[in-house]
Image (tube, rainbow, N blue to C red; front, side):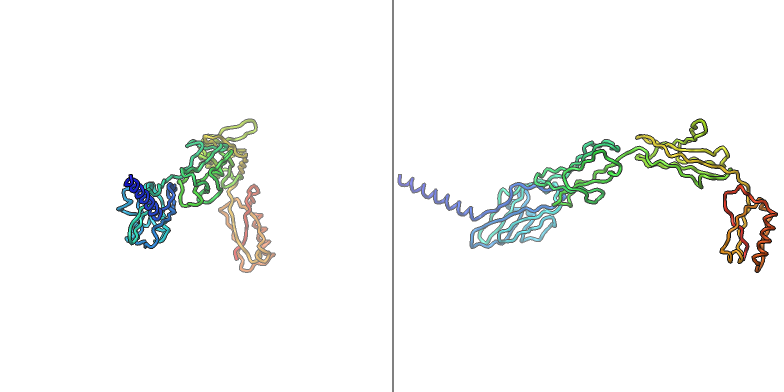
Length: 377
């Protein structure tokens, strides 16, 4: 009876000593951590050991099979083999570890192990690291977005401790929050969107492209060389319109006094190579894509009966003294050229010669262009 009592006492003593010894050796870490793929994460860690001992070596292991004998992702007595892991601690009580650019393969269990001048210790079971992808969910899936639709983008992640999101459009920050929402979206909202966690801006889920389609708008007609042309000359009417996707068909119409006429062709340009008199009139175009059609405003083309005119351009000192007074003349014949040559003409003789020239030539009063008759110096 006495022997059994003595055995029980020694058992209690050994258990108490074991608790005291265990309390001297300890590694404290968070049991579970979550990292965003592409970001960096710090594993906070602290450790204790019996007073009077000196830490000689510290190490971190990845996966339980390596907790005791390695291989280690970091060991203070060995040269670093990778820049992915950085030991932030010391050989006193801080054992924190940083992991850069976390990938899916970095998930799993990590444990800290250290050696003193008398013993060694492993912080079992360590910390379990989860790696989560950052994703963007689009409310309408991959459907075509048209002006007027309601669209929502949501940034999600499996790590619950991350809640502060930053949104970007074409690489520029716009708003904060988990979601982007457009009520009655417009073409101005087209662009490339991404999100990130404010604490880890380098981790992004990629880019979501928002392409807002719409029917033709701002449809207009322009003319080259202009809307007032000479008969027999070339004129081009061009229909322009803003649309997404681009305009598929252009339709041209001519308005006559009593009805509307559709002009042949479905291209953006309407070309009159030798403009006839009956080309004169009012025109407009209609631009069409899969989302609708839009008409331009009406333009009026004027065709003028033109005569072949010869143009003479000369400069005289007298004209220069008169502040380059311009005199417009359109001569009907190109075969009769009369040059006004005088080395030093007076104002009176110049005007007499000019009057004589005008009487001998027919002026094309029908021409709309201003032509300048000047004498040589």
